[in-house]
Image 1: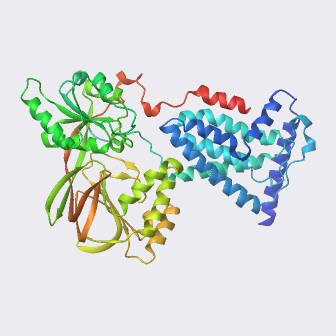
Image 2: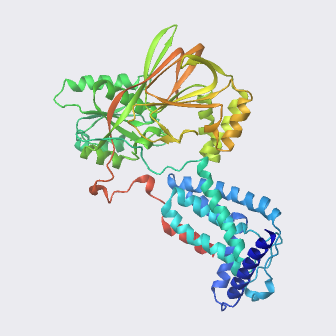
Image 3: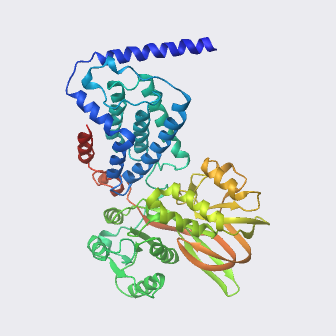
Length: 526
């Protein structure tokens, strides 16, 4: 075995010598100075941090790409610099073999194997490509140039660069275990072939919540301009959105115009109110995302008023499930509708902390940190379902199947599955909190005994004491019995991207940074 390994290493050494010799014989040119500047700019990942800052300046896929890229660089740097370099001591190439104009003034003294610069470059480029393939095509040649610059300037052997790049690529791909990549911008759903067309919003009543989302922006005027034939309302303080829409609908029904749809511009709470009215009266639903998070709109695949105007005017829509939550307590029974998720126990506080911290650390690191904090101070709740009692830290109920299975729910795979996604974290297992944190950190929560998951059409949960129930980001109240069902489906407008007429229409979450901005940054670095 040792003889076999010796022969393999000897071949690698000869390959490295031949590559370094060939590079040393390349005639001097102006590219030599560019390679020196590029490789110095990439020291300690500075170049990639600058690129990440540019990418993060715009919401959407490029911001996610920046976050994944930074996390991947951190993982690749740890693996290469703190693990592999300490395991494999290797001399760097002799600088004397290169012309003086190509040599780095400050030669690195750490082990040559593997290349940390190549690992960071490959990790960042791969991570960006996972989230934003178009941006990845711009960054990939720069990452390759950084990797090559380590050979060109004589500080690494070619095999150091190849192994470093392989490690970086592997680390970036491994981030998908904790942070799944959404392959589609919208959840699957059946097309509704005969959705009513609403030219300029005719036949539509839409309520606008001006305090959702950006506090400095009131979307009312923009909604009225995009849908000039619609009846546009503004939410009123102290008046429930459902009651407001019901009153407007009753008044409109006495007039000559036929009402075909109701809609809302705001966050998930406002959208949920419109969905309740749409389901109750058999009307179509128009979703205008102007809130802060817009979970439902993102899963539906609606991102701005242009898409709303296109879809409603063309009558393009899909079938979407709406769930119901029935709360039973000593004071009586109340029913609410659910468009996203509901929860019992510590989950609402967990989500609140995650949303508070995700702008600083990213969604999944923030979730992991929030889980640790919540599990330290949470008290288990006792619930009964599936004909037995359980002690759990929290219960999560999604309106439709969430992806991925056996992991932290990230986004919906379908909107019309007629199923509830139920997940819980057990508290009746020894060292359950510690086991949950370890399993989450190893991306193995789905195989842990502390984790449970079901997909069911309905669910009834009994509690041994009143517990708060939250739905779509709002606390509904306390209950001793909670019943979840799929109440029905509504027709929700969504532009059909397979329609050739929209081929030239941009989707705002696809609008990436102008390539000229990235090109200018790379040019300054070189």
